[in-house]
Length: 521
Image (cartoon, rainbow, N blue to C red):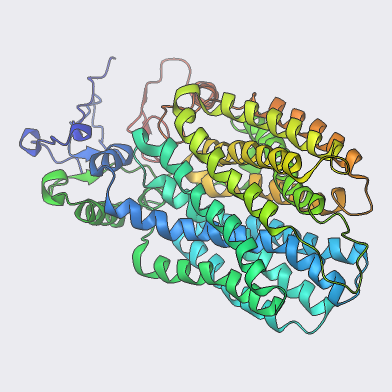
């Protein structure tokens, strides 16, 4: 028996007409005798609601709060390249102990991203966001009070644990963005990372020769500010609220966002308008390897692993190139070329500007493939001439390497948030980030002062080519609703078809994908 089509609101155009609604559809349809479907035009999808509030002051304040988390991530990671060599000199550490100092942060972030990402999917984005900020802020300041090598390792492990949760604020911001604005604005947040990358060598220049303890306190300030803003300005994600059945709270958040954007929430969402229930079953890490997600998950993991080795390895390699006596000046002061390091760090701004202009025109996947291959070529070239070229040539090569690595990593972050659906987004993003942290954990041993710089460059080139190969097998998400790509939707349709009832039974779905109220008669 063919079912009549369900009416839909024109909420995307801001012209919702409640007068057309006559029936009470606040509950899923029930069936008595012949199946019937009631009109649902009082219900709107969360995607349509987000589109209707547009871009404005609300998203800007979430951008700043989430962006400062990226600044904190950058400062806490970038300071390692300065702090490790400084303490190698001051505390008479071996090259292996110096590498351990960097690796323990990435080990902590590996544990943190798996823990806090899980909390983000099961207990809310906002609590996980605030917990990350609190951990980074507290242990970032406590770093200044470390009394020795062992205590420093423990404290920096906890800083890394907090850093591991910083996929959550990124996902919060992504979930508040309309589809038409998502690509560029998810890249804009990366400017905050670049700000942290530029602040760190500046802080080092101003304070490191006087006191490394004051240096690490300064690097903790951005996260403290982010946490305060998060408490005051960032609500829970309405997409997450919808996914756990808290529809009324989700509508309140959306109405508040409309007000912050200068719109009249009563016109957009009259009293008889409700968000369509998109409650889904709980998901966990094992779902990432289900039939629907397995292929995408594996390629995501290897893309993140390779990008992290490439990105963090390039940062450490550049610092090593411009401090050629690293590891040989035990008891002395590292001779950082701050000017060259700052110039190469500023390359990230150039990389961001370029990718913001191209990501929506050429797409997420071509952007990643091009960036990773070019980044590998330039870091390889840098390592080949590290001991023979003049400072100008080295600076240009380092500049290009940092620019392309930044381009690739930024688009990988955007693509990951767009590919994954709401119920599994922070878990999946965190699992991918865990692979990234694993790559970051490996990078200080790969770039360590005991390894010839030319060998480092050759290995980095191979890794970047492999990363580009994995990225080119990810689904394209340009122009699609968040959480929907052709490849994932096809996999879901196959799973749905296999679950349908055969024979003379009729399947009637209130929500064809994930509504628990679907009925079979």
